[in-house]
Length: 444
Image (cartoon, rainbow, N blue to C red; front, top):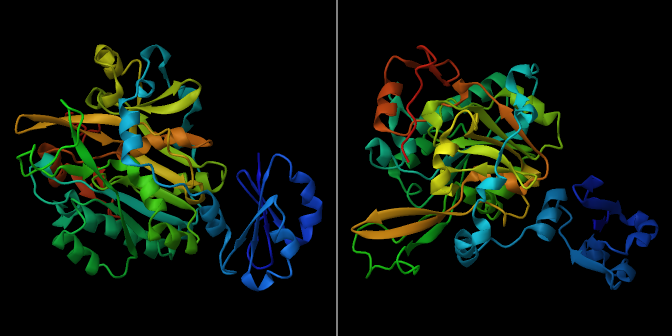
């Protein structure tokens, strides 16, 4: 079934988008034959109501009055943006047997389908069509630091956030563009005064902020929501919903519409602590010349240090992300094998902005168990990489290890601060010692 949209002049220029056909009003008579088995929509300006009354009153056509300044993406958003998935749906799905991995169906991703980064040989790209997104919802507690991870001083007396801003400054100057920086904050990070100060001191960079949701924590014993009476710790009874909330939270924010108005076509998304995750011109060129690709993610060869990292699989003829939290206990050792699962997820992701309006019901949802004050509870979480389940046209690029230098633990931070690492002239973190001596992966 197609969605067929008829528009009056000055509302739309493009003729086709995904499973949607666009026609000008002058073509109305010739497309009426498509009424059967398709949905028809008519967008018109209020002053045209009398002129096009014969279409507005047609029972086969849903008629919508629209501001004549709206563009193609506004129309698509009005029609197809779905309500955000609510907590009850996420909770039920996390506990559902149908959500559990059946290990006998797991097939490692076919490495022959990977895009080889080293064969990308053209760096002629248009940075004016790109926005850089950083996942900025986490704290620095795993590094024995207080406050948001992004405001920890990491190298050359600069914080993560300041280094990322300098990366964008370099690109803007070199390519004469104005790349916006988008931060996905959480309730843990959004009101931090140091972060506000850094942003206020970076007025030359367009910094846009939206927020992921909070979800309740659930008592593992009773499956009921924690409340202040049953949970005596100072730990909040709710928590950020995980990076998988990126898609719906961005869609429901005003940042999404601001990006559309700037004619942004691609988003490059990465963790705030991965200072090696640059907006690579070779990858951007590849995506700008393969416009059918909606979702692209970077992987790198798995080592013994990465055994708990996520990987990709073919499962029921669909590419899926496989995380350690999804693995049955009896299959953990097999999951850890670098012989069977040879790649792992860097969480460097490229998404086509106008593909975000989608159905995210198939995201991987899992329970993350914790114990505080002798109370065992779990959080419902999803991760951004599992969005690969929700897009039709995907690609996976095998990139060098030097695009993945995360800082998760205190010893990682101490290493980064040492002379083993430098910041290049473009403010990219670079390892300068033997490349077999890589950062230690965070324990789960």
